[in-house]
Length: 317
Image 1 (cartoon, rainbow, N blue to C red):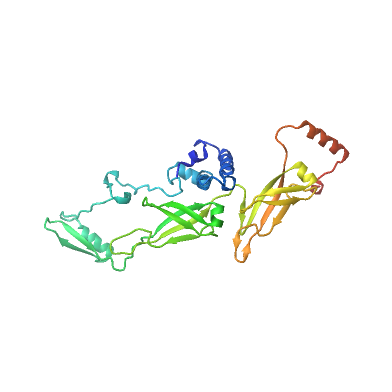
Image 2 (cartoon, one colour):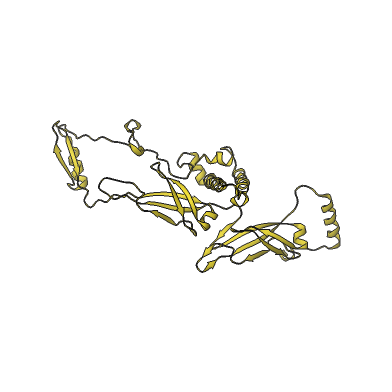
């Protein structure tokens, strides 16, 4: 994945508020529901969510800036403490190669002795023609863990509807992974035989741990969803019908007259899938005033205030 700062279009020194603002604008612009004729919209939307998951989180952002994790949130290999970088070999997968020599001098313990003390005689030594020693290891009873573990972030829509996503493994290999519909955060997808390999052993499995990216509109509450719905002042006073986004198509909600900001409406079955049905969508109204000063609105409010005074904070004492 590209550098998350580059994806969100913010400098490395950007404030948390600037990152949040940039994420919301891009998420709204590239949301698949707003770009139904663009086949690449879902990929851009996913990339934006993944970038925000890294630098929108204070701890992960610090780890990324220090080079401890990469753009996908995976730990970077930092090397072994005290290791000599000159000992690295260009082996496959970027692993380091180490050479061991036996201590042949008087009074020096041979490497075979060290191995015998560590493995209880599991190392068997034999002399080679050059006077050195070669060792064979009896691996009976010592299992190899060839499983690979990777993390994958999906959008809320992908988690609900399923789909396909490309995953890059630590080995550099890339796979298209089918996301089952209804996957939940923390759930693991197992791909048999897609892990690491070793001679004489069956290949390991690939274990993909799923996380769900924050959504620009919805908040997940178990199997329910919550959304803040902006409404105009006149819609709150006069009532009317307004469109509400859902994970499917938008629906119309009837706003009663004199609706206060913070009033919550329940849309049954518009939440996340669950056993035996679906959760609900809870819609909370937020009255939004127009930007800038409006002389007519101010004059109207002054007249209304003088003729209809009331105190909404009377319960506070």
